[in-house]
Length: 280
Image (cartoon, rainbow, N blue to C red):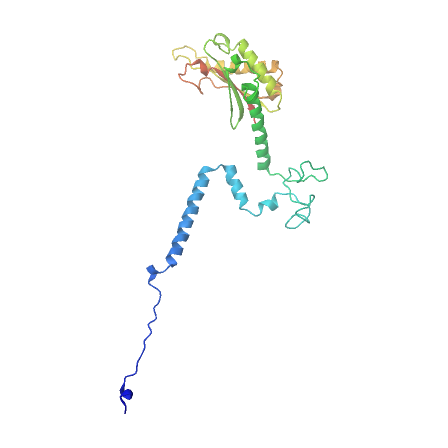
């Protein structure tokens, strides 16, 4: 037997190395990335809810709702496109504000269906434009004013949920009414005539609010309630004399000294009248 026959056989072991333990792999990174993305989306949602109006949130919701473009349009015929072709002037889905042409004919005019909210938004937009035009006419914003500088010092305007408020008030040595009565001064008559001309250009109803300053508590009879109502009613009569139709007056109210606009409560600035052009 040769020496080579007595040699031991050579055995080679191959050790299979598997992936590292859990903390050495990459699966946790994917899960963590998904978690961070979800948290980012959550905080983005919270921010949007706080930073947007109800109308803006509805617009965002409509964008992600695929049924809105189908339900609120007027197309001709059936099918996903509401017509034979999305490029057809007659068949293309429309919102009801007009066909795709700038000035479509009656035959090619879209026949849309407006929701109550769409009509309200349209009316609100129209009123906002009216309010801006009236404010510009009164205060001379961006053009000539219809009011002299002397009258303009008595007037402020603002737009609220109720409508456009034109407020005019007493100044020191320039009262709206004579001697703590409801008798209008010449300045008040001029202001009312001018406002009546402007309000006569639209058809909205009008409301009147009378306010007075506070009076000392030691007075035997406090006149604030009677005075605020009487002054508001005087303005109502002046508006009618100036040509504003009486049926447009929807409300005449007196608030006495309960809604002060300046301090101290005895300030003459609190003697004021609010003429409100109401929203439709």
